[in-house]
Length: 396
Image 1 (spheres, rainbow, N blue to C red):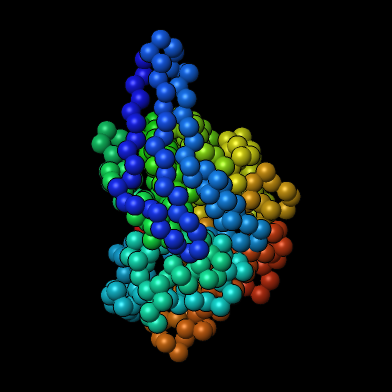
Image 2 (tube, rainbow, N blue to C red; image 1 turned 30 degrees about the vertical axis):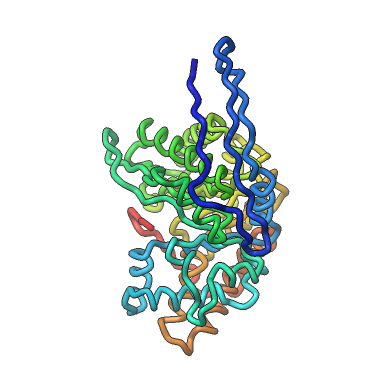
């Protein structure tokens, strides 16, 4: 007989009013165990957040919009700033994040923004809370909740994602601060196997994170990134992706995760970045959509692709190719570098360049909005936007 334990209520009181919404106190999951019956008869009552989770997921997965991923850790943000000659200070990080969230009409093309913890609690240079700025633009604030990748003992030099310890308390605090969805990134490396151990660890960690997040009112973005590193062809990527997604959805179901209240952030199915074979947008779309149809239930509201080091234009072209016919899910984007690269270089840390940098951000956001609608043409793109951004062993 499988044992079941009752979850305690979150430590933080959530009976507050944030952004015009009444915050519900999550109820304890009711689990009824009958000693004389089989484990399959356990009844688990859904979280009291269920309706809100579904509504949030649908808002993020709204037509013509996608996610701005700006959740780089302070160390990674420092690398970005260093590339334009700026020191990694909180003031410089604040200035750059202010530039991003205050871009005029950003909400026309962006439905959600993933923030780093510092940013969730940060204000703009003008003193307005960044969360408030996003909400005014109709953008749902999100939060990175994982604690990064560490070596996985017993594997083939692979990694696992840490951060489950204390996640419930952190998620409760993030919800209270205004976050409504969460992100957890784990990775799978094709050159290193991937081993069965690494795949199972990635899937189980994502499932536990998703369950805890939903229990605290946050829509979980499920992100098992299959790294671009390697010389393998597109068929090998497809083979590995099938295995990974089968494991992920098995464990999501085992953990009673509400599929209507999650979002996915997968890699597109492409050849390895070091492969001699290149794939057209049409081929990437064919392989990727075939994978999704085999593995992703239509109950999932949104597929928000990561760019994974593709050039700005390449990521947009591939997304556009996937939206040339109706899909069972909202197929969109959750890009970091593929939205920010030209913007960052245009800014260069100079106040007089803020407007031009914001214009560059809006240009990319609009291009991907059109791609989500299947209407992007690629005309008039700069040479810089076509430059690849792959970094071997890239970390956030």
